[in-house]
Length: 272
Image (cartoon, rainbow, N blue to C red; front, side):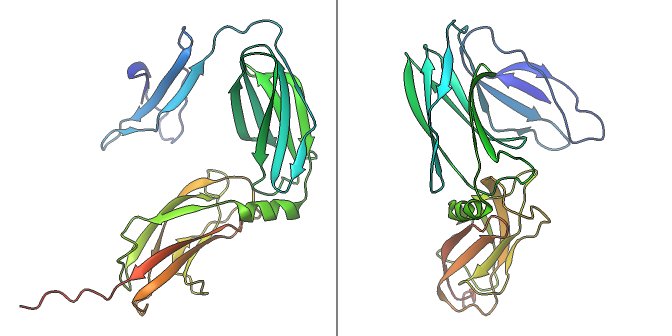
């Protein structure tokens, strides 16, 4: 394993034997700025480089910074949070659900000002946490005391989850697929993270016939998340030529998306 910062190697190490987990500590650069970190893994095959992550190093924190949160309002699935800050610096608004951070919003100020942020509900709150969602403002990772808790119903969480958009497309040419062909569908928007996976059902023309997707065992109820996914489906052998729609549904999130396809007759080969 090797870690690079702006293309220069910062550290290299061997992962722990017989495990898929690893961790490493790399000192932040001395000078303020934005730096690109990459991790490359070398195994038996070709090296694999993980998507780059940008890390921002800030100027030293000035004195007298503070933050307060104004009246938080809920309109449908959208939460509005006005934050009043003092001083010129970088602030962060974190959104938490129980022990999971759902979102992080970072912004810069040039003077004393009020910045209005919005956050969208995309699932049920966790039942194990009294205050379903809480918001807090931090400076360099330190809580400023500006925070607010929000409670909402499971029913609203379900409505907001179902309304969350899903993006999906075929890897193959959607304008020329054939009956019996196996296709790959990629996109993002379902629950497909490390701790939150769901069944994804693929059907044709909104029928009850399952032709592909993924079968998982959790979650039993919708949580927050919009994760990348990749599933396969096999078109029915008797699917008539013409325009059809592939329908993808998430069993826990209740989200769905449609992909138009055009089915063409099977190739019969050339006649000599």
